[in-house]
Length: 98
Image 1: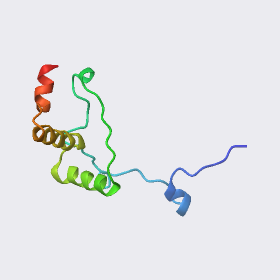
Image 2 (image 1 turned 45 degrees about the vertical axis):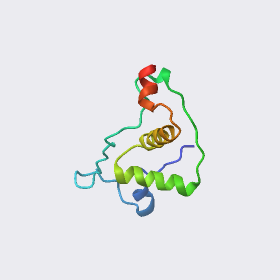
Image 3 (image 1 turned 30 degrees about the vertical axis):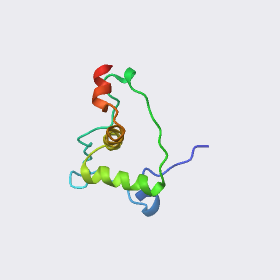
Image 4 (image 1 turned 90 degrees about the horizontal axis):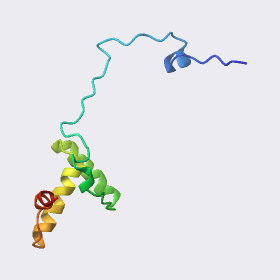
């Protein structure tokens, strides 16, 4: 026995027929300028996991939106600051050696 399902939520709730979307109601979604992707030479890179408090993660996500940057760029900036503090080569120097 086949069940007849409504074509849309509107039809299920109000009994109305589904309407075709119009240009005025369509939403355009734009991708960020800096898409999150692995570097071109992925074989020379390793993933590192860091655990941070939930509030910190939320703040980082907000910063990504506010500054139109991806999370990886903020993390790499922080790693560069830490490497400089302890007198180590920068990430760019490590990349040049690879």
